[in-house]
Amino acid sequence: MAQGILSRLGFSDKSKQAAEDNALGNNKRPNVDKKQLAFDLFTHVSYMASMATAKASRDVMFSYAATLNLSSTAYFLDINTLVNRLKYDYSEACRAIADRTDDHDVSSLLLRMSGSLSSGEDEEEFLTREAAVMAELYRATYETNIESLRKWTDAYSAMVVSAGLIVVVSIISMMIWSLGPGMILMTGTVTMTVAIIGSWTIYLAAPKESYTRTSGLSAPNQLVAINLFKYLVPAGLVLGLIAVAATGGQLGIGMLVLGVSLLPSGFIMNRDSARLLALDADVATATRMLGGVTDAIGTTVSDALSKVDRRSLGSLEPYFRRLEVRVRSGITPDRCWDHLVQESGSEMMERTINIFWDALTIGGNPLITGKTAAFFSAEISLLREKRALVAQTFGYLTVPLHAAMVGLLIFIVNVMQLFAESMLSDTESADPTGSGAPIPDIAGSSGFNTFANVNFEFLNIIITMVVVVFTIANAVAPWAASGGHRMRAGYQIGVMMVVSGICMTIIPPLSRMIFTTISAPAN
Image (tube, rainbow, N blue to C red; front, side, top):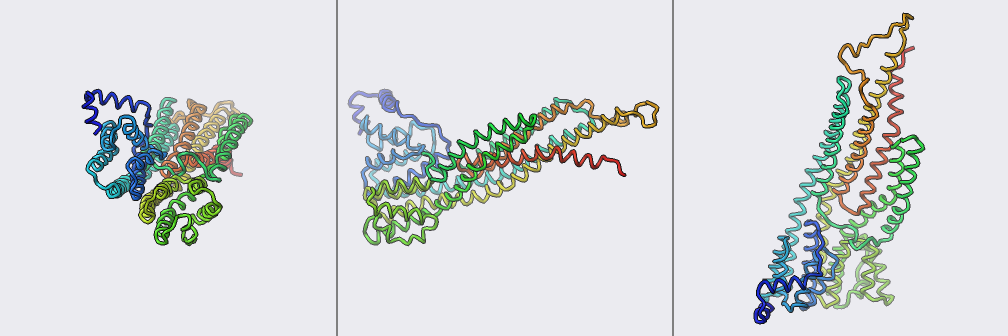
């Protein structure tokens, strides 16, 4: 229809495109990861399929779809813009936006939607079928990412060990021949590069999804974690710098203090992640049961809340008990459900409740709506459990692996330095026979390096840099594999910094004590 009107008014294809550009000029599309966009598209299609059960008009469905806080919302905003400003029908608007996007999945979905809308196919049947197709595609892609993640986590452990052994071998080789600072710098750079590339690869291979609400943290324990992070981490940074200055440049003390300051907020968010996984696993049961009870007794959801056995809701039982109290108090149902989402702090809860509640507010079938919302959340929850099997094992492995590699590097360098100091003191000592002749340099005459040309200050700087990079990489990799809020990465960094700080603080005096005991003459 819009194309016919534009042609009668004398608009050519270029003029039509210019008019569309002018209409869409103010709409901006943020750059998002394709994996995150696939998750959002699955949410959008499930949401519209639930809305279609109310036999709502296309204007209502697309208007509601344009209000969601998702990365794919920008495409529906563009569709509404063309409909409202250029008087396109929804079929032509979907086709126009599909031609303008470079993402294949979005373009394919909008073209199928355009064809269905123009043919007069029932929206509920089409969107329900598309939701099932999107679920299959998302499941296949997610499981592929999990398999890739499993391979890369195994490879990362081998890469970190191999990279650490490169430095160890190069340091031990200095006992045979002086490698020079260039060789040490090159091996250290290779080691740090391997660790960085390995953690970045895991970040790219892992599925992208949000556990906490993308609109911001809102659960009580999440707000506590934010406040702890705001106050403790800056204080830890300042105290760490003071400790380093007070101990004469002992970086291990500073890392230990800063790492401890990161642990409280990160620990709370780490525990909160387990709570969110439990809530997300139970929300499917809650919406399915609530929709079925509402349809069976033929009443509203607010009345059905009192009929549901809350013991079957699992971890959601206290949340729905408070929801029922608010509804009975006369608070607007929309505000009650919004508060439920806010106190849960779960992105999955927000999306599932939107699919369930928004459709019911416009007259959707509660039984079908509950099944649609439950199908969406159950699919995501099952996939997350598969991901957790890979991520948790890898997370447990990185802590002892990091401690072993960092401890080995620091121990070897300290033993070499102590050995060099001992050899230097021996060669400068006088002849015990009283002749005054110096002791011959047996090590030098036999071709072995006596460490005289080794710059231990430069070597310690390189090793410190390697330890810092290992600390960050070994913290980012487990967080990227498991996902979650950025403060969970802070928790991992805090744990690794504590381990590194302990190694840098305890191993030097321990190695000196061991070396002194071994080198002391027998009585």
